[in-house]
Image (cartoon, rainbow, N blue to C red; front, side):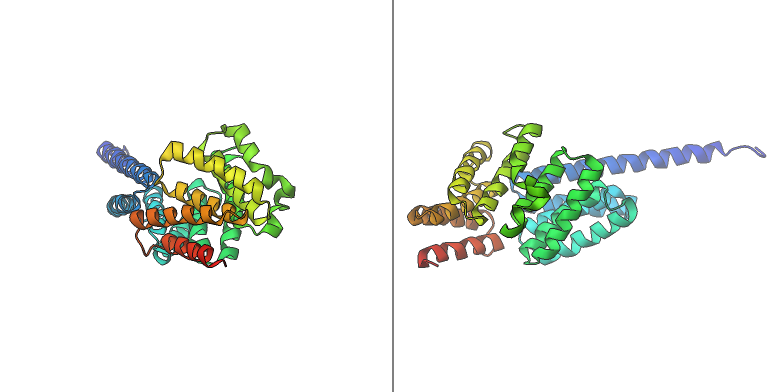
Length: 292
């Protein structure tokens, strides 16, 4: 057909496009499964699911496909929870750089990876870098998703945990300390993001020396978490660790020791005795017992 269109080539192109879409959809589904596994606390399965899916997706779609990068990001988040901080930083940093170059700094995938990376940096002791990246994440999510989106509110709640006491009271003109009420207004009192904001708010109150208020807040959070997730869930143990701090600060040292002993034992069973979270908990428990 002189001067005409190659209809066969067009049909083939549509077939390849359809297959590409199917591969991307399947990879996104596997990534959602990895997220679900992560949320149950099964970080090893989450990592293996995301890594395997990303490897297969890369062969079919290319290393810089959005779905492949999203799967790599989830694998990095799981590596962090497994205590493999150096590997997590390397992977998340590479993914974020690619996402920022391809999709922009405020893209939800870019900011999601940035949120995960700042957690790693904070646990590596590089708090200044972590706070700077968290601020970028807040700004990016606010721009792309809006101020009331759960992911925006979650990132802002991270600032309650990350900022030093001298800054937390003045952040956002003092509005950050009212974040739990804002979350409750937008999302309701029992939403996971609202509870997370209250958890971090209790930490900020503890840093500010407002121990009675911190103790009341974290008690509420612990009760809500246990009802929802059960006693072994990682965020429950993190909240109970903070409750041990407020108990000790208020003079109830035996209660704090009992709480922290239980936390350490559960972490050792769930994460392993040499996991950084377990070791940090054991160090805090030793400090209680020695009166430091």
